[in-house]
Every structure is written in C-alpha cells, then in structure tokens.
Image (cartoon, one colour):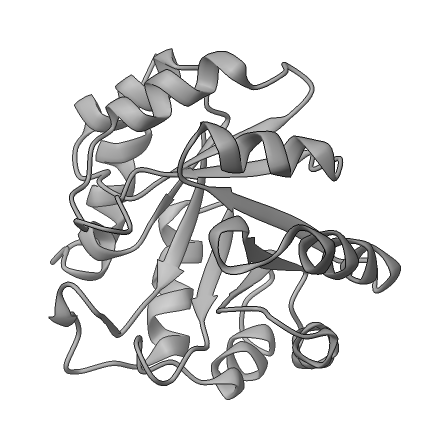
Length: 211
C-alpha cells in the first residue's frame, strides 16, 4: 500500500486544521516517516494553500509531488510544472468532458502524471473514457459532505486491474486502510488524520500496517 501524504492547512469542512503551519517541516516529517509521495494543496480560497508551497517543498524533499487544486486551465498545469510538481489532480466533477480530456492530454505533454478524481460510477466511466491510468476515488459526498468508505468498495469493482487506484478521504485508522486494501486499492491519500497526529511517523505506521 502506497501513501500520498497531504500538506494541508485547512479545509471547507474542518476549518483550520493546523494553525502552526510550516509546509516544509510537515513535508520533511512525511518523508522521514515513510510516505511515498506528497499532495500539496495550493488553493487559497478554500484550503488556504499557496503555489509557493510546492516550490519550497521541492527544494527540501525528494518525494514525488502532486499539485492539488481546482485545475481548470492549461496555465495552471504550466504553473505546476514550473513549481516542481510531478503530478496534478483533475476532478471529474469540476470539468466538462472535453476540458477534462484536453487538460489530461496537456499534462501528459508536460510529462506530469495525472490523478483523476471520481465520486460515483458516472464519473468513473468518464475517467476511463479519457484513458486515465491513475484514478482516485473520493469517499466524500459533494452534496452532503458525508464520508463513506463503502464508496471505494463499490466503485473499485468497476475499475480495470491495469488502473492504479487511490482511496481518498476518511482514512484515519489501520482498519480504514485495510478496507481500502481489501477493495483493491494500490494507495491511499491522507491529509487530515496525518495533519492532526501528534506523532506523524507513528500515524503513518498505523495506516500502512495492512496485510
């Protein structure tokens, strides 16, 4: 099981998660604790992120970096590339199909990986239609904001084995990670439970202790 650890100061649902926030220190703790990649929130309006976090983290950490933001335009992809991102997030729910495909292809031209995020079966079909090979299933309902790992368990049955599958949202314990692992996920993306952990390395061990 791979871990994408998220550098995340705040969220619309949780508010401020880390008042004493230093993105570089957090990224270094993730790397030292055994994370395999980092997700860096750059959205200012909802998550109090910043594009400069990517650049700062890139100069101190060797792990692959994902720019997590509401990516709507090719300019944002170029920004991510220049800032040091190895991958970007495309949210199917936020994009019309032609824009989703165009941004996916542009990211590939920039030699960045693309994590395509889905919430339901229709969005999964759209992700597969553009040839996505790295898909994240977000367990958070965009309407109610409720989180249910059963979303991953249901949708994973429709994902081809050739696709790398990432479980997102609601992962707090080893039992949660075990559910994702048993559903066929290759990785988990975790932010809040790691950001709130007093001992990040211990929490990483807890989450990755699946078999």
